[in-house]
Length: 375
View 1 (tube, helix red, strand yellow):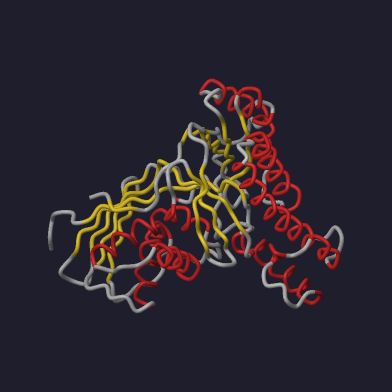
View 2 (cartoon, one colour):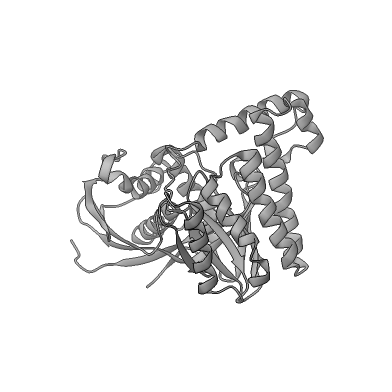
């Protein structure tokens, strides 16, 4: 076995900018890749063995390329690179031998920044480089999404993987999930992102994510009876929602999805018009919809958004929960007027409101580039 690391790759974490739960409903979503992420160091082996390790994780995985099965307990983290290898082989791509993979991350886990997708894409880039696989970025996105859906068991859309793969500094990534199309949208230089983590950990596998997914499928099924040509819930006309029972959970989920998809379009238009105030209004409206209609917020997230909304005169443009919800973090988009002391005040006021909760933390991040080889 070659003791010298052969390949180093990196893939960023991401923030869901706007488009909450629109991705798997065939809608559009905007995300931003961060200047934080996961690095993978890959060494080829002469045998079929796989050795995975990670800074900060005591449990190292040892297995075989010929027996790729999901892990549990302290080794569950290895399912992300294992899933990548599994879907590559299932797609007919040749992986010549095993490898050693070591991961380093400066992303906080459980905060909705999608460290899982970053691990998947960093792994995929490394395996492609080791084996001379020439895959397009779109192919990589779809393979990584498939790994998370079928091997890890999370019924996510393609947002996380697409933003990590296509990310670009000072840009947002726009994803048209119905057509699997990607493009970057310019973002004004000098804007800042603050991620306020409630430290109320969420796990998409164990949370209400799967239930929301099923409710959206049910809504689409009902609406198709009135409009057989409707392919995706996010594309439903507002008036079509009258076919869903008023006040029902199904109706609320559908209404959020349709209106959120419209907000994505409106944010793009506002950015093109350099109207950051409107962008902020739409971000706050997105959170209110997630809270009231999709019901994937929690009181701690609502408090953070409320406190940030009161600081618009201090440089806060907008704020909303980011990621799947049911815990995790709030994203705030700000100008450079918003500073660390302002963030500290938000955390202090939050602790007064929620004295029994985990202590919140704050992470100041900027935009960053997407999945890439480092050497």
